[in-house]
Length: 270
Image 1 (tube, rainbow, N blue to C red):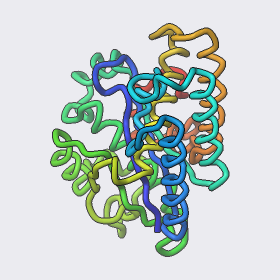
Image 2: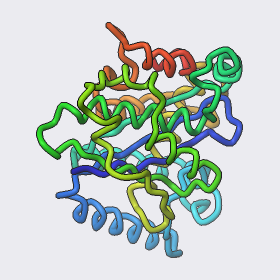
Image 3: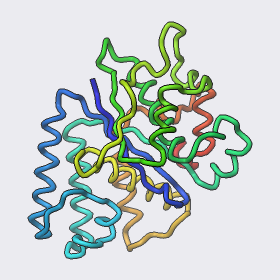
């Protein structure tokens, strides 16, 4: 059994929104949680204040308790976290939406009519996990979905996962004998990210990928001299950890359902 921990970046009105999910095997969960707690303890020692939660947008720009750590040192910490993930062989999934594309296409495509950007990201990542994990034997692919608390989206998204629209079935080639999304266990769980460490890692990954798409697509300018080089380096390392892109943005023989998400994604996703 697996857990996938999600967080998003850019759903507050930015041009690009990204949701990232960190996939952790249940058998290794306690080791990962202990290691992340040790990292937060070390960061607490560095800044002289207890760090209960790693907020990437504040850390990245050196706001609040992070203002005493200079840019190169913060960059080194980000690199260390990404390497920390690679060393533990955790996999990652993601989805991205270009807001301008979404707002243009949504009124014309009935499949998106009842979806917000957040629910579009959430549904896409859930379908990608189903497509990927259904190939694993017995219950090894069964996955629990865990999200940062979303009061506004919780009820509608839970219903969406429990009762997915029929058009989504082509995404993973649902067999008639199987219930929809049979690899996903129970309902989505929404948690306080201060108490669930892996959501904080997902927050970092979503932020880095959003910056990559923003800079690559020309939606924003670099905030510091070598930001593009750093972001590209981190993006490459993160993509090495993702599940196959054939489960996220398939190219050859892409099912119709996958094209729903591809049409609203940043051009550089494909």
